[in-house]
Picture 1 (cartoon, helix red, strand yellow):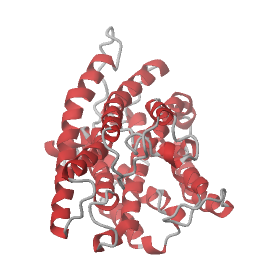
Picture 2 (tube, helix red, strand yellow):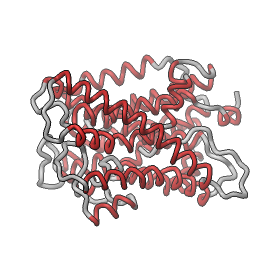
Picture 3 (cartoon, rainbow, N blue to C red):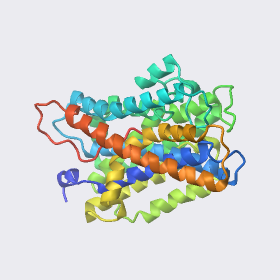
Picture 4 (tube, rainbow, N blue to C red):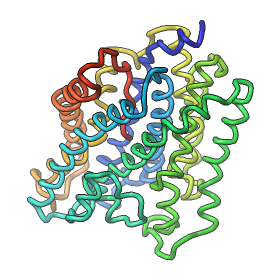
Length: 388
């Protein structure tokens, strides 16, 4: 199979996999961060695991973005057309959910444990234009829906992509693995170096890192660009047959080993660095199996494919949906274990339904109408990476 044939191959397993990543973020926020289960409840003993789960999912989204953008790259594409598609992909869902979340928060003064800061004019504007995580201000970073900081990183990746893809594609195939090893080593090393330097004095109450250290490790777009570059190189490894054909069982087992080791991992590694390499291996392995064996497996079923297509919408909409549900039930209400479990399940179900509606009524029409100039007849890539 030639590289040209590979480049035209669809990757259905990765579309379904996107839903699993968005669902991991959903679980972390609704189960562990929402306050549905009261402080001290036995369920919340897994809070560190939830951090690794959700942060690892975001890290995988960054890797997946680089992978899919490289996979679907067209020789006749221009930077302007590329940026147009990315802006149309990111902003409609972002604007809708930002308006919804801001309206909900202005309509109530109830406190929430969800990762959302109080709306302010400056924070809302910074959030709207996706520049709010460029400074180490946790209030600003958590503005809007609380998850759009990752879109700031994605926009930085998209702006950089037309300039970095050519030199990365110029790396000789025989040098791909050494370069991959260097990038992987940087991803694993940077958090330890930053934590050792220990910038800043204000320590985040629920971990041993300062605000500035946490920001550099987790929110600062140039640092997270290492994961995006890793995705680009992994796509090249699969395209050039340099990635081995293997069963996903092995990278998944490596990923589970990281979760088992969570209690002994330093805080700096709970935010993506520990899970990035095995999670990236899952992505490359699924892609290689799709290429070699065609459509197969439960990730490629129609239901998972549809949920995967709506994964970006789920990532954005689950916070306002959960917030609205909690306000309807009573923001100060304390739930029994049974009731809390039912509320969690209701929030998850409502978020998934809302994501499918947002995808179908906003994302799809906007992409069809504005993603490319009307005079263009070229088909858009089948798979689109999510914002994060």
